[in-house]
Length: 218
Image 1 (cartoon, rainbow, N blue to C red):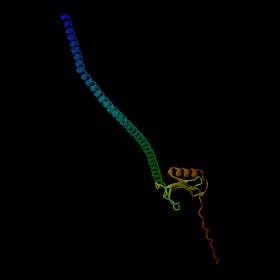
Image 2: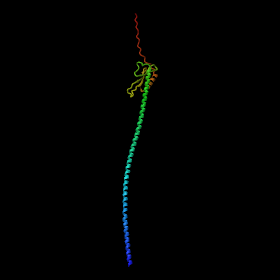
Image 3: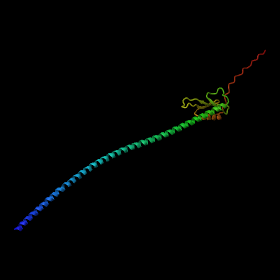
């Protein structure tokens, strides 16, 4: 009988120990659950922050791309302006060179004209005194084959931009003439060529008839 009681008591003790173990296991589960939940919440918060920062980074990247596109457009416009400026500078240089060449040519022509005029003036000074009855604006005379005169004329031309005379010649023997040379050398050449070919005799002045003497016979 005593053995049975002891066995029953032992069973009860064992049951109580099992219940205590079960309770302790439950408490342990209860104690470990909150940290896991806390870790899960922290991970969610971290993910949320990461997603927010990623969105901000994407927005910044999009804004940077927009700024880069605008900068590229401005750079293209600046390059176009630079090309236009370079082309305009090249045209200005070409025009300047053209004007310089024209000015040099005009100066050379003016110098030649002045030299020709000085030569003609010097030749006129060394020639015989002017003969009465020569045409106006005579600057030189040439003797023809027939003994006549060809005169070189320098007629003022107010219509010319430089107010320089127009040169030509007039033959006092045959009446031939020419005009329209803008250089004295051309007019001189025309006059000299005509003088070398003209065989007309100079005009003979009219001779007054001599009055017959009447004699009276006494």
